[in-house]
Image (cartoon, rainbow, N blue to C red; front, side, top):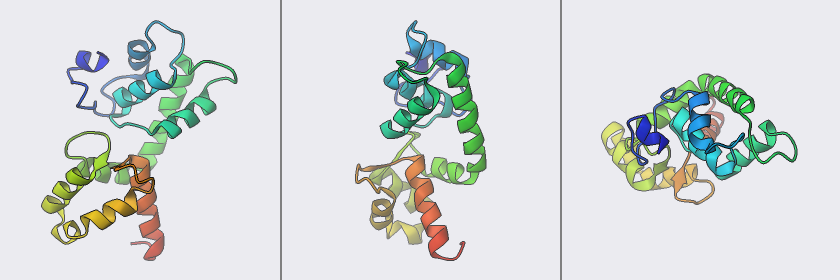
Length: 163
């Protein structure tokens, strides 16, 4: 429902900065004093426009919620967002590349969308789309997240001497 209030349907993620942390917290906490795992998942999509993997969200809960707490409090969520924005700023180039390939705006890449994007943007790579996608999708889940994409790019840079 919070997506509708930002003028977007559930199928269309928000653009980074479309929802401020305090508004996202309020929209997804459901009146609670914290964001649990599911609430946090929705809130980060609203703030960043990209879906985080559940294991990444669990790691964020462990890092930003006090031991034994049921979730992340408002101030901790604000800090989490600030830290993630700083990290994304440092990785802006990879994030922009990922966003360009995510033509459907899902917050993740699937094989069909990846093939379509490469067919338009990079015909030589399009011939190897399945192979490249398999390499990026280390978990075999059929989707590539920003973190998967960054890990793939980091491996490519190391493998070819920095290019």
